[in-house]
Image 1 (cartoon, rainbow, N blue to C red):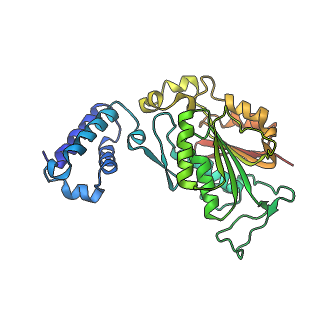
Image 2 (image 1 turned 90 degrees about the vertical axis):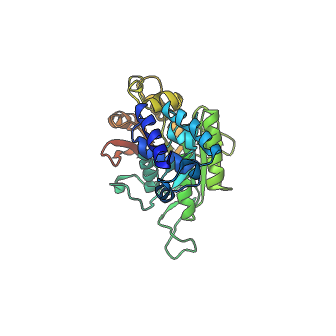
Length: 328
């Protein structure tokens, strides 16, 4: 058997199991779990399989094909998922980062005055200066790539339902690149997800000012409590009925706790609105991701507690993120 025969055999295996884009997934798995890159695979297609892969590698791969044919998510098998320009460790028990969620990151950065590619970014409400605790950044400052003016000297961020940490960590990483100080608090109820968030933050943010709290939803209020300048969240918003229509990989393999509230999908948005004044300072911004048909419902919930409420669409033209500012 040649390497090409082997790849064809595994592609057909995944296709019979109903895996979409099976051929590409076979190549991704092979590249991720061996030392071969795409060019090396192409060059070796006509070679005998035993000349390309060791017996030990083939044995390990057999387990992988079985797992993928059983619809275990590819990201879990590989152990990582791309998000923005970073890579996050993932596995069973944590939600896999999605491309659409990058809109939430872009919205958050736009609220801080950062230049982003987000369509209609000018419609995002800006985090306002917080009394005397602010600083102006200019192009001739000693810090480079600063585009923000009149923001708090240290940006305090809460990322609720953080999962892998992809949203909060990515925002913090972008601020680090710009030399802007931040404090990041990520909250997560799941022990498994909190471990992944901690590992990802350690690897990506290092000794930066961040922490992961394993709590029900909001950060713990302490004597040194300070409200956030920016709150972001991608809470479980899929309805009970919609769960039945999800792909097997999502419905049966990813944590339902991170996907649905078991009801109409709006439970945590109601909680945010009821408790937000205790956590978001005046002049601060909230941005939340939601389902493509939930924009109007989320705006209705946010209007009583926030001003400048609006919804931004993802790159597919669907409502994806709603944001607003707590007016001074």
